[in-house]
Image 1 (spheres, rainbow, N blue to C red):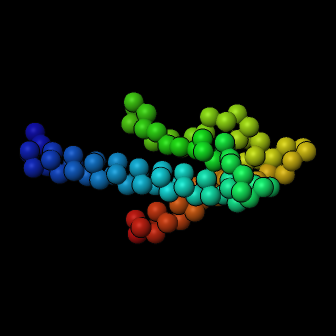
Image 2: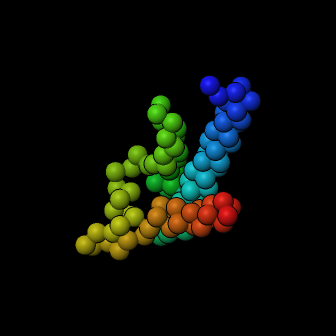
Length: 104
């Protein structure tokens, strides 16, 4: 049977990990929004896509970064008539580099 001290320590680690994951998700959201705004044709315009990027913790405990705009995939990956203007993939890669440096 695990000791109470070990159980408490595991709970503390779990809370700290959840906090770190939330910070990473926030960084991805912030970076993705900046990239969408940087790609706007009219720099001073509003961006429903950028405003829709957010993160959520699911009931299963997963953290997800998402947008509810159905056209986001066309912006991210492009179409036959429109070049890709990636915003989410580079944001994840940027944070992945930061996070891997933090862990080491």
